[in-house]
Length: 418
Image (cartoon, rainbow, N blue to C red):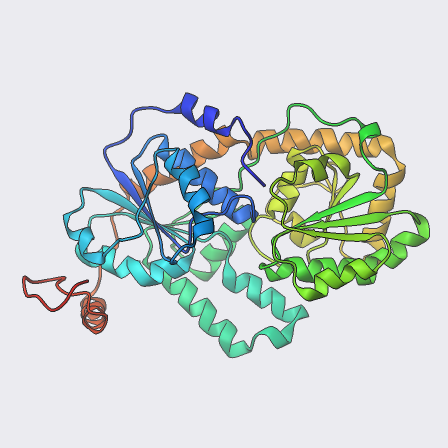
């Protein structure tokens, strides 16, 4: 998932004079681009924005020594990292766009922006609709949540989106869902970014029957997908492709995933700094996701590498994939096993899907295509009338600020350091 070596050169070649309006970005952490597809997308977005704007990132976590390398990668692109941010700084800032990665940082800081800089547009990047993903999870793993918790999550998330001037989703499906749940919301689609490979390995360089799964295991749908595949799909697949092997790549695999190595032909690597060697060696990428939301980075990454994908309807969601054309889509263990078998035994199908998937990525998800969509979204936000805080919201914010010793926010009195 590491940005390719020519990414920085691409950003530099495309740079233009920065706009007057800076962008202040609040995020849970500095993006660790080699550990999850969501972080890789965010890293690319920051790099794109830095081409035309002064970008400053405010991570809301404490950071660690291991974080420094990721901070340096952003600083090399001209992006400032502000770990000493205080809310009172907002009062004296020149015009900015406030951007929030995920809804949680917006819960913490959006009201302060509204109060101290009411003219600033506010963008919230949903990444995926958390409440939708968790509602789907409950179908398969009901013990992980409760109806009350789902209801509270949905209300919190939608409250933030309702207070934003513009919400970003990664797929049109998520955009339509949000518009149904929040009529009148301004929503723009900024998908994942994938650089299509210029040179692909020959079939002879791949290991026939080798299956690859890539996923960040802090993200629960990935663990569920792997367990379902090994328990339900793999036994059926071995009846027709006896020598099939499964390589599971991804950061933070939990014990139940590590234990899968006890199964013959299953290997769990854990974190790897670069997935390219695995993408080049595998015969098929599998994305057997039973629930989730947003766009699945593992699917786009494999397609961009020319590796044919077998996935589910959830895995294909929002990517405009056609079964049998740009990927194989199957939702039952029997159908999923048969789809993998077809790719393992039909070289013409394998090569055709590889070529068409690569063209699909180039047309929709390549860096220049998404950069244009992101810049259009920022410009759109600046044309909207920023939402105003009502009297009740202002009183609630001031009360919360006083409790958190964030004053002075509205007067010259000194009541402690913000």
